[in-house]
Image (cartoon, rainbow, N blue to C red; front, side):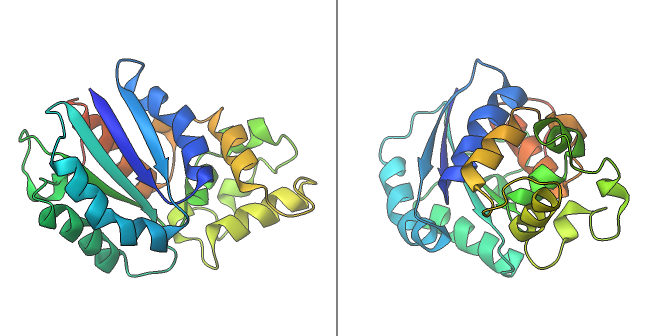
Length: 210
């Protein structure tokens, strides 16, 4: 089994390189293709998927991962799904278990940093001065519901604790926090939907519906 990831930016790649083996183990190989932001990812997606459709092996899967970025989630998901449909590739959304799919479309709500804020233990192991009570504070109880931007929220949390004073170094933070993440305990629903989708892609029993 092999998975091709199509992502927006290098910080996502840094996180996936650590997180994916923790979800799927070492038997699944993967490669991460980084784009120059979401507009570049979405613009190139139809052509890239058509290219895959010409030669994709039966045991390969494609995962498209984008940030919501305050966009309408359904509109964004439909755009990702339409690109796969135009390439005649089968998506998870358009199958019913245990049918096989080729493309998994997933959205980090509202940004990848919500996944880091969803694992406070990992955040505090990477940055020990962060308050252990962060998860109980209003505005942080549901990582996917943080308003005003999750990367901005993460930057404020870390700067108040004395880290990243010159501005959030997104790649470094992604790598440092991901090193301590335990996928099963993450409080971000969008992360758990991503995790369950990966398990389904690998043919594991646990999976999300869409």
